[in-house]
Length: 165
Length: 373
Image 1 (cartoon, rainbow over the protein chains, first blue to last red):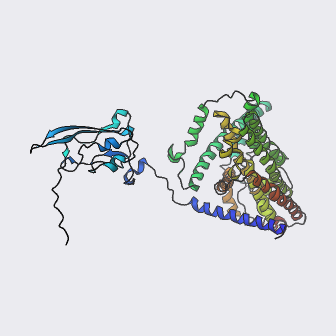
Image 2 (image 1 turned 60 degrees about the horizontal axis):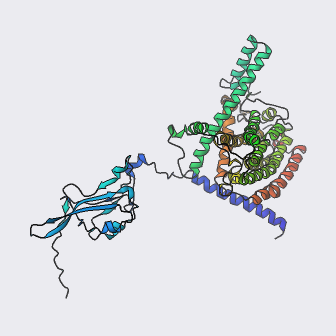
Image 3 (image 1 turned 120 degrees about the horizontal axis):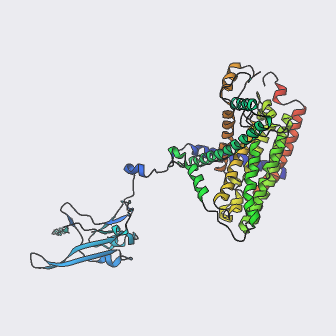
């Protein structure tokens, strides 16, 4: 290609490609805006279930949780976020048993690494996706997760599965 | 003749009434003094208000191009956002830098603002709304608008900072190159109109805007003027003097508070000035759309005040510059200079010649169809 025709073809290809770009941005000008208007859209806001915002201990309708106060979550926590107070009680059939007294979780120390939830042998704790955790005093970040008067859920007697022939 | 009936919303009604009242009650000297002060204050106020509006409009349109909402929290639709920003920048501390050339460092922003203020005066905002109307208006505008680059170079030089220096040098190279193209594009239109006075140029365009009058040549000149004007304002794809990734903020790296505000203000006003000069030269300035023979239509168009026409035409051009800004990737310095010296300038020189031939051989639209235009 001679340099003259190269000059002109370069010029016109350049102009055409610029026009193409402008057509794209023109369409983009009229597209629906994607910005989430946060405080207004609280009702319709969708937060992913896997989003980790704070540690909770699910209680069932009988006010029972699944925490056996084994302390594995405390050992796995890299920041010392969790503190467990337990006590020994005697059950009706005379056995000694360790039960949870207070499960303290410090949200301000937590890095949301999920190690406590992963290692919990009885699935007693999990991360919730309620993200509006901002408060004005740091002391309020320290939460007690087990509810007043809650107790350990009794394990159901497992019926041995019938052995298949 | 058109424009002979009363136009109730026209600004010139108010100004001529004011002039008559002053002349009846005061001597010539005091009348002129009061009028000069009034014009100065009005221009300064318009300068600030237009900058605020432009900043808001730019942020909104930019947001729309990126599928965002833009400012929408301060006031209804975020209308007070730029006012709040102005108050913030007025309250900010001006940080004094130790090893700068003090005098030049503090003088540089005033050069920028001064140059754009001088050009601002020459804009015809509407019928009878023009402060400076020389018979060499086009020359005046090209002369004073290029003073701004002195501010940029001084800022970069006196900052004692290599980033500022490189930014200023880039800006200087860019400005000198593109000023040439802008000047030639304007010169093409001067050939077509046969005058350098803005008011006369606008009056000639009552029935046929210059961009149509010189057809092919005018359209090429129009686009070259827009491109080079855009490059002169250091915006859009030509904003490499302040390329953040390489030069932090280019020539205004060391400036803070109100001094930075001056650069910012001048940048926005330069965008407006380029758009309004293009409006005056190519799109008939404040002239309403008039078609020969359609008297009723002309009458209706004339009821719309001239400043509305001016601002809407300018607004379209500003929108165009924002559209370009958010469409194209930034140029490298060598690409930038290539574009000017290898493409725009040769095209411009040929274009000027074509325009001369068009005018001399009577091939402009007004010559070809004198009954229509």
